[in-house]
Image (cartoon, rainbow, N blue to C red; front, side, top):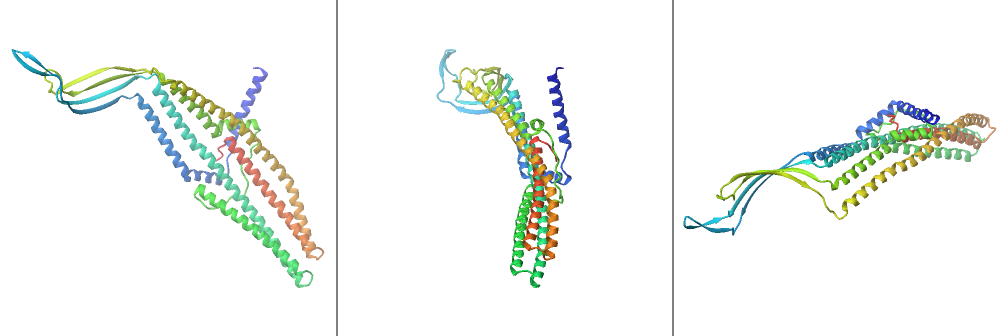
Length: 435
């Protein structure tokens, strides 16, 4: 094995290992339960399941092309005038009638396809590809719905954490307001200070109302997706952490993401359609036969008599004005279009994967920087509260310290949330069934 082949083998081995490692990672049990609950609840799946049943019927319908076709017919026809001729018989002229006026006919006909040069087989294969595509559409919808439920789940956690921070901010402001009111009563503060403090409390209360409104909307979305409006008990951003490089992540997407799986299936479906169109000029050979009762046979033309016929029929297309050739070119063009669609997915997914990985890296770095900022902001607030209590600083300094702590704590929650959503997006792109 040369050096290039060895590198290629090791790279493939690495990618294969990454698939197993990715599949082994799963979401927390609560998120898994919500996702599975959405699969059972969401009405779209019942629609897709009916589509699978319809395609199963189409497979059976296509296979009936090999079966004989039996038809029964019965008819009565009155004909007048009919051919007659006079013949001398025993010295007398007698009228001989070649067809009765009243014609009765009952017939049982059968046509059995003997050779169709693979047309039925190709139709069955195409129907099976359509059935497989309909099943893959269910899995694709599951992956999309799982991604939506995951986004809702962590949005709810983010909003709950943000509301907790907001409650803490309001509690600190309320305590500070009481101190300002006490100092105002003692003549050490202005009424403007009391009004300013109350105004800041009202601003933070409005922010909490906005957060609560957003939380209610996410609860409604959760109910829409899962049928349950109960808020999750989880409080942590604990989604699986992914560290694949771009090439490994893209290779995982090619194997596991249903965008790719469906795209490849559409290529197969287009190829099956092309094969069927190419068979359009092939002949077909059938055994044909019929049997029944009718009148009109000489010499007793009114007698109802049994009859039968059997034979072989062949149908050969000779000229269609170039229609077949154009249909083949159209089918081949549609197949190439589906093949180019996979290349388009490669380009799009590489971009999206790199963007998700970039978001992961940047938010990890931001979180590292935020820890020091939070420690510094808490210490600054402690000092500001002590100075304000001892009367050596103004409420402006206290408000600034409180605002700074609020900003960095919300920033940390925001970065944790963005890191989680970036990991969830990368998992979606890679096609990981983490539920």
